[in-house]
Image 1 (cartoon, helix red, strand yellow):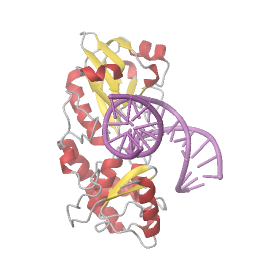
Image 2 (cartoon, chains in turn red, brown, green):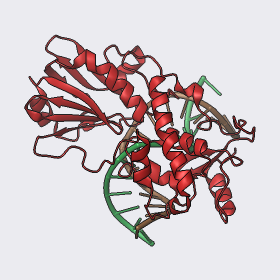
Image 3 (tube, chains in turn purple, cyan, orange):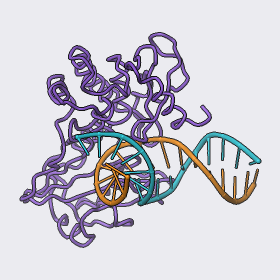
Length: 286
DNA sequence: CCTTAGTCCTGCATGC
DNA sequence: TGCATGCAGGACTAAG
């Protein structure tokens, strides 16, 4: 699923391909992809030129003429491609045709992806926290937050930090040696500092590797990312920890799979029973 | 303040 | 082979 590194990869690849192009025609095979009305969406975009492409958190931001902006969230299975594969064709949700007759397709198997227009009077993505790409930003976002919520829940909260999803939250907590269920206010300053160093480092490394392809994520040229070969815990349930060989454990936090090494990321005191319960609930049969 | 469960979705793995 | 079940999860919402 596209998180910050995957969306950044796509933004970088898309930029030289479509900045400067003008929308000629837009068709919506599945109109609910756009949060605005179908007619308004089409009318607003036609004949507008793309002046800039950016990313904020997990959102792609297209800046257009007349200070109009278009955000695209790929959610789990969304991708933007010029040459859809045969099996993609029944999942095409939006078709952008440009004035030079080139065509960009939004393909999204699970229909969770969303697009939204932002008129110039509206602040862009107001509920989004700062990008998790700098150590000091991450530290400031997490420290002095007197929350008893699990640290992993905070990392996934886009209002606290933008761009972190399930994969990189698990990976960063592993590198920092923090159990994902540790209440945020019980994580020491030293550990928070360590987490704040590792999280941006992991995200940047993943960008260098063009993102992580577990199943559906594809780059704009349909290529896979390569960061999946560098994961320490995500998706490695039962496999030996890369540091200590203890089998990686999977529990459920916020109805989401959480992977960690019980040896390198010890549970805080009084949390063993809760971990066991979540484990049963999260992975029946494993 | 917080957590939990439900919603949206389809492909795929599993079990009988 | 085929059919049913349940799981994956980002963001949002409602209920407790």
